[in-house]
Image (spheres, rainbow, N blue to C red):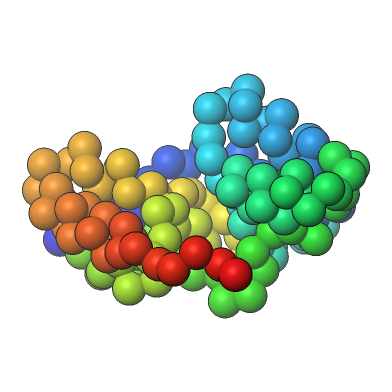
Length: 144
């Protein structure tokens, strides 16, 4: 059984919770990524900020680009995996939680990131990726 350490991206870009959404957005643009784990001064994962978070919680609300990432990140119940987690288990977790990216944490520190695309490009996990995407893509009602 393959583990997350076998397929994860281990060179993970992070932002500190005090950095601005403008800084986070610039990094996303520069590295062509849609999510960045947020860490505190001890390098512990305290959240994740996505391009969607920035759009909906900053731009759409008329907030300033200097808003700290901590005000727009997803912080509660951060779903995460461990390097020794089975890939099938991770795919199921991503499907259940309806997430496309899974931070991989060891001893409180971010050591990797697994995206749905990482599963999809591995032939033996294509079915899991498809099932996870179906669960993630379940339509929801627009917010009122």
